[in-house]
Structures are given as C-alpha cells and as structure tokens.
Image (cartoon, rainbow, N blue to C red):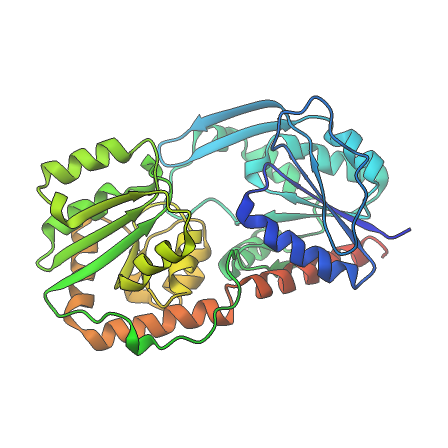
Length: 381
C-alpha cells in the first residue's frame, strides 16, 4: 500500500487546484498518494470513500463546525473548526501531514495531537511570521502562545517565499523549504520592448483584487489626484468597498481617469488590460496580483503584504517597494516611472524575470515536493 501525504487547509481555492494536480503527479512518480482535506463545504459527513486516481489528489471536504471572522485594525483573521478532521486523518492514516499555518486555526491544533499519538511528522505550510508593518488583531495577540504550540513540534516548514523561509529558520531553527506562492505557469518569452511606453506626461496603473478595506485602494485614487503626471487607473475586482471608492473618485474629480471593471472572468480581456498598463499598484494587503501582472511584464509598486512581495518587488525593483505607503509616495513613484522610459523598461525586465525564474507553478511544485519528501524521511529517522 502506497504511503499517503495529507494536506489540511481551511479552504482550497480554485486557483490552488492546478498546483495540487501537479504536486500529486510528481508524488505519484515517487510512489506516494496525496490527499487534500479542507473545511470548504458544510457537509454533514465527509466523504471518506473516495479512492485515489493515478496521479490525482484525493479531496475530502470536511465542512466546518464553527467559522467566524475576527477583524483587526489591519488584518481580518478567519477562525475555522472543521468537522471530523480527526476521523478523516485516522481513516486516511497519512505518513506525513502538511498543515496550513495561522489561517487554519484553531482547527489545525488537532494536527500535533494526532501526530503525537501516531508518531508521525508534520510540516507547516506558511506565509511566515506576522506581516511586516501590519497591526495584529486582538485574536492574533491572544493566540501567540497557541501559534507557538503549533509550530514548535513541527518537523519543518514549507514557506511561500524566501523571505518567510529566512524568518522562520531564524525563529525556530528548523529546516525550511521554499515553494513560491504561484498561480501561473512559467511564462513564455515576451517582447518587453513592444509593451506600452510612457510619453512622459501620463501613466496607466492597474489593480486586481477584491475591493476590501485591507487593500487600501483609496491611496491609489488619492495618488492619482496628487500626481503631477496624469494617472489613468483600471480596477479589476469587486467587493464591499467599491461604492465608497466610486464616491471617492467622484469627490476627487478623477472619475474620467478611473475605470471600475468589476470581476473579469475572461482571461483574454483581463490580459488585454494588463498589457496596456505601465505599472500595477498594490497599496495594501494582497500578493497573487503581483505575480499575475509581472508574468506579463508589468512591474508593481507595493508595500508589505503577504511576504511574497519581498521577493517579487523589494528584491528586484527596490525603488518600487514602499515601506510606509501614502498617497504622496505612490504619486511620486508613478511620476518617476512616467518620466523615465528606460527606468520603466528595466523595471519590466526585472519583474518578468522574477516570475519566469522563480515565482511560477513549476518552481512551487518543485520546492513543495522537495519539502514533503524530506518530511517523509524525517519520520523514518
């Protein structure tokens, strides 16, 4: 009977399924099956009778007994308790468990207890420590010793960024494996010289993501008003903050320069909007948006978010990383890019190379599987 690696996450988003498909295929070559458990759907009983298809992950949707959002001043935490996780683990009998870090609390606290009774190792899949410059929610502060209780017994960590790996290794002194947080495959070569060049008087910015307070999109609108360069903005996404942002655009008298497109499911339409932009702007939390546009040669102005921006922006385009973002700093950075076509081209080149060389699905699978195989071996020592 083949050994099983079980993954537990709060939820499995559609963009993550291609990763699990590729990881399962890679593990199949090693004679290992992959099972992915989540609290996605509120089912009465999890379906534990599914069988593995060759090279495919087995998904078990546990549902949740409890789910609540806890809003902090900068970060919203999600508390989730899954149904029958212990039973699913017992019946799956994994040789290794890989559990999500903070966002799966408190449900994943069952993992160290289960592995202790079964004498099996577990790894933690993590974005790293608290997000730089972001104030914790009251729950995060209260849960600090609980988080430590989850992390300390782990055999090691699989990290979404090199920055996270460095931080976790320093904090816990355990092996850390980098699986760059990716949703795109390695991009094919593109002619960066054919992408739009600024005329020195205007620049087009793009934002993609859910419109929530944590994204701080109002800073980009205010920057468009302040900038000495004309700033055109395309906003792709929807959310509860959209009405307030549309009112702000009206108050700032920049309605003619801001286009709210809503959610765009058509990949060709979205790609066309990215390709006509000079730069992306991420003034608050986020992360996946950065690699999505950089894969098409569009650099990003960013601040502290999920840690991946430390690799994707700060390390390759440091002048586009803002320690303390405000509308004036964003406006100045936009104006500087608009006024120097060579600088914009260099930023495009560095942004594209970061995704082509590191932040793609192939690299993510490679790093994740390497960590998982090490974790399996750690249980045999």
